[in-house]
Image (cartoon, rainbow, N blue to C red; front, side, top):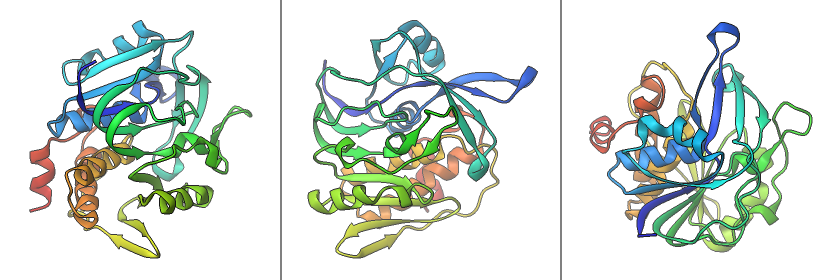
Length: 275
């Protein structure tokens, strides 16, 4: 495969939203939202995922011109039932595409490890200059049906990463992530909803980025994913951490002001919020 600017590795999910007659399906998963954000920032993006190829291709068809797609065939596609919004959101796992055991090695500037259900491999899977991780899927357990948070197993982390993004709700479960970041001199950004995210740079140094003017929230699904993508892109472009966090906040602000993946913003829209 040819070289990419941004490769997102993780399950594309079939998200079922709502209940009863109002229930609908749409593509989901960090790999999808982050790759679409990277593409709209002008990067050549690839989603490397696993599931039922025809189903995933159909889910992503409205966006197929914006990124490349490589699907490793599996018996099922990861399907999440989502209820509620924001902090009140709950999810259950209806089907799982399985662990991504041996994906192809791909040359890319940025590799984003984007697990949603403990699927990503720990060994390095790309010739990447910059490695980012959003480990939400590594602190999830669904053995009892409903997805709940569990402590992060350090063995599930890659040997090296440059930046990680977690939410403040995931932070109590992610102590090994901070230790791993210290060891490989990476940073960890902790998002906090409408409040500024903090970036832990190691040795007790913590920075916050400016957030744009408040916007009315129309839909917040995927806001953390586009924040992470924009942050990784900015850091890989050698922006300083404070400016990179602000860029991530702008991506999230544009996303939540609209409805669905179509609301993910362009570089121009993000920069307009920051000027």
